[in-house]
Image (cartoon, rainbow, N blue to C red):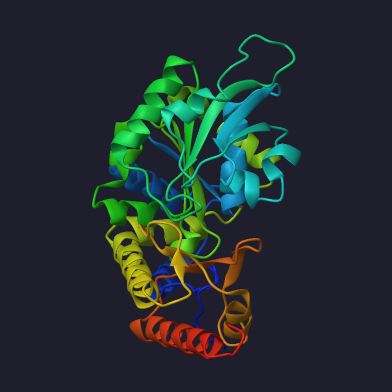
Length: 350
C-alpha cells in the first residue's frame, strides 16, 4: 500500500466506522432503489441537520450530485452562474454542459468565492432570446481554493439571487470541512442562509461512493427522482450508500473527521509558510493548502510524495489533508520541503 500523501482527500481510504456500518446492513434482503428502511432513516438524519422540509436523494459521486441537482432546477435554455474555478466548471470534464446541457456563466474570483456583486456581472439578459437565461447560482463550500463562505456571505448571495428569481445551489463536496472551520451547524450556511439545493459530500470525508442531493426548496423536489434515474445515478442497492451517510451524519463522525483534516492543513501551513522559497497563496480555512514552490523543488518532492501542481504557470501546488492524515505525515513532508529548498538555495546559480 502506498504512503499517505497530499494529492487529494479522495486518496484516503474508508473510515473504519463506515466500513462497520456497511457490514451491519449487509444482512438479509431489503427493497431496492431506495424503498428500504436504511434510506428512510437517512431521511430523518438529513432532516435533523437541514430542517423538516429537506429531502435527500442518494447518488454515486459528486459530479452526479451536481449534475442531478442543477438539471433538476434548470430548463434546457437556462444557465448556471458560478466561479470560474468552481468544480462544476474546472474539474468535472464538462459534465454539466455535455451531459446536462447547461450553459455555465463563469465569474473570475480572487479566492474562489462569489459575492452578490460578482453575481450581478453575469445575472443579466433576462428575456433576451440570444442569451442562455440565468436560473441557478452555484457556490462551492468549501471552495476549490480551500476558502470558506461565512453564513452572512451566503445569505447576501441568496438574497440577491432570490431578488432576481434565481435559485442557489451549494456544492458541498467538502461541506463538513466548512462547517468544522466555521464552528456552526450545517444548516447555518444552507437552510438558514436561504440555499435551495445542496450536493452533500461524503466520499472526501471517509465514505466510499456515497453522495447525495439535498433539496431544500420543495418546488424542485418532484424533478429529482426522474433526473437521477435518467442520468444513471439511481442505485439499486441504495441502503449501502444510505448506511455510509448515516454513519457520517447521525452522530459526529463527519465533524470529527473534518476537524482533524482541517487541523492537519493548519499544521502543514505552519510547517512550510515561513520557509524561504515558499509563498502560501490562499488563506488556509479548511483542509487545503495552496502554495507556490520552485518547480525543481516540486519535481523532486513528487518523487517521494503524492500531490498535484495546481497552476503550472506560477508553480502553485495544492496540498490536501484527509481524515487519516497524521502529524507525522505532515511533519515529514514539511521537513522534506525545507531540505529541498535549502539544497536548491545552496546551488551556485540559485
